[in-house]
Each structure stands twice: as structure tokens, then as C-alpha cells.
Length: 450
Image (cartoon, rainbow, N blue to C red; front, side, top):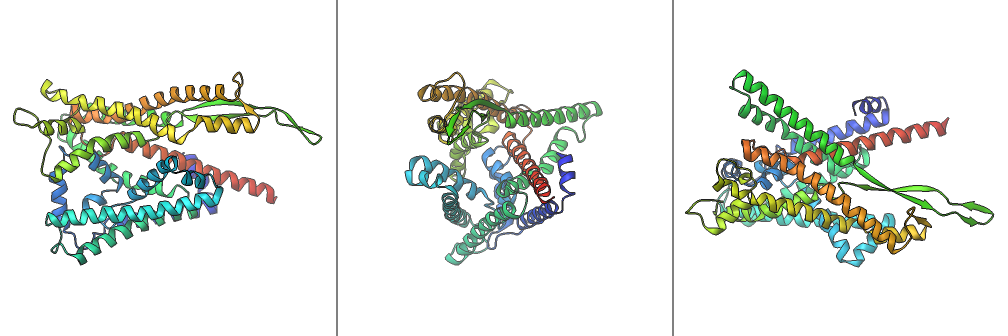
């Protein structure tokens, strides 16, 4: 990776793109420090500290990490690019249910531009809904600088919506004029901005003020776990199953063409981080709603059934080995694992269609060696896909459960978890591939110019 960057910096065009990307990211981080007008940030900080602390919602902590801490401080970038990500997922799901969107997606470059425009509009709509909900919620709890009124709410909604739209535009500029993957890179820099704070938290909790032997062992264990997780996520992200495809020879005019060999690369982690995000969000949703209603997760004789259910859904209650009364709430972890596996199969089923792939191969005269075209090919692709989805889901489960285990067993409460690590590694690897492809195109241009 470092060698790739070193070689890229020698190329003037790529160097300009890297500098442009860096300057845009500086603007992003500066915007995260500008408070939204009309909101009392001191009250909001106290609210998040009391409601979403060590016993609070892991989903809210992760959302704050995705926004680079701007959500808990209620800056103008409080929504960050999360409405755009949500809009993209919704549009992708709707293409399965709405035939017109499916046809639009297949309609080449024009179709993709229309899909992008629809995603932008949905991003604005979601930003307005989310900012309006927060403005009304903060106003009802007296977290605004003035009384809840139309003008004050309008200013908050306009600022947050404009901030989200501006970040979406910056992401598109990075894609066009920078190193590509603009939205992903903005998400990456937001998550990385919280990393020093998490490492400092681990240092204060396990190393600072401890005996030399204990502190040294704790430091070695922390570094070893982080490195092992990074290596594991890199292997999981790059793992692929290649299905060989042979194209039959055919006569075209006086020439014999075809007979080429190709491959269909199937990623082991076909669904990315979507299953972990879906599973964590669904379990955390009732906790967030209950907190705004003043209901806390609780256990013991005085707790209601609903409070015990909230305790099961709370990730911070899992893997607590202090007593059986607390350990039984690890049942939520079992539900979490089942949901991750389910969403891995569900999301892959709507993004990869074996029947469509088999039909395209048949039209082009391709076939899998040893497998007849048509239904046998569909059955073979489905069998292989189900096999690798299960392996990928198990890998995702490991990446998601390891931070939860250490959080419950040792109290290592940080916003940086398996989901963040998968995003970081995936974006870094994809960006490196983009830079390498730019260098490759430049070499081809130089060869043609010579």
C-alpha cells in the first residue's frame, strides 16, 4: 500500500487528485465543528452523555462514529452522509419490487444517471424528515436556545439538510476530481476521526496507572487483537470463489471466433457490512424509542417484562460473566447472530440473481465446464452461492462478535468495532485499487503517445 502511494505521488495528475481529496476532507472535518444555530449544544452534550453512555445504545454510538462525532455535538454535518447511504439502500431494495426501477437500472448510462438523481432527491427528503424530527424532539425537551417555534425549527432543518446535501456534493466531487469512492472516503475519515479517542479510552482503562507487568500485557493483548482483526477482515474482504466459464466456438463470416475461458468472481462476503448494520439497527430500535419515552433497560425483581426485553436487545448487556442472572441476557447475542446470517442471505438474494447470470451466459454461448446450460447451471450457481454466503456470514459474525465479547467481558466500551473495521479496510483497499488503475491507465496512455 505504501509503495503504491509512493509511486502515485510521482505522477502529477494523481498527486493533484490526492491533494484535492485531502483539501475536501479538511473541509468536511471543519464543518463537523460548526454548531447548528438554535440548538443549545451544552444541553445536547449532557443529554447524550446521560442517555447514550456506557449503558446506552450501541447503535447510537456507531451512528455517532459514522458522523465523526458531529451527531453528538449537533454540528451542521450532524446527519453526515447517512441519509444518502440509507437512500441508496432503499433504492436498491425498491428495484426488486418496482419493475420500472429495475428497467431503469439496466438502461445503461442514462438509467444510472436517473437512478442517481432519484437517490439525491430521496437523500434530501430523508434529511428533512430526520432533521425535523430532531428539531421537534429537542424543542420538546427544552434543548433549543429559544422556545420551539416555526422559525427556529426551520433554521435547524435548513442547516442540517443543507449540510447533508453539501456532503453528498463533496463526495461526488471526490469521485469525479479526486481518487474516487467519494461517499465512502467521507465515511472513512469520519470513522477514523474517532479512533484516537477510542485508543485513548483503552489506554486510560487498561494501561494508565497500572503495574508495569499488567500494563505491558494489556498493551500486547490490545495490539494483538486489533492486528488480528485487521488481518481477518482483509482476508474476508478479498476472499473470492472463481467459477470457470467456457465460451463455445462459432463461425462468424469466414472467421472462427470464441473458445475463450473466463471466470465469474463471487465474493465470499457478498453482502458487505449491510447484515451487521441491519441486525444491530433492528435490535437497537426499541431501545432508542424507549429512551425517549423515559424507559431504561433493567433486570431484577422490580423490572417489567418490557425492560427485560430491552436488556436482551442491548449489546452492552451481552457476554457479562459476573453472574448467571446477567449472563442470561446474552440470549440477545444468539438472536443477533441469527439475524446477521439471515440478512446475509436476504441481501445477497436481491443483489445477485443466478437465473439472470445463467441466461446471460447461455445467450453468449458460455457454460460452466461439466454443467449443462439452463436449469442445471442455475442450480449449480445457487448451490455455490449458498455455500459461500454461509462462510461470509460466519466471518461477518466473528468480526461483529469479537468487539461485543470484549466489551461485555472486560468493559472495553469503544465506538470502534467490527463494523467500523470492515468499512475502513474495504474503503482503503478499494481506494488503493482505484489509484493503481489510474497509474495503469497513465502507463497505457504513455505507451500509446510514444
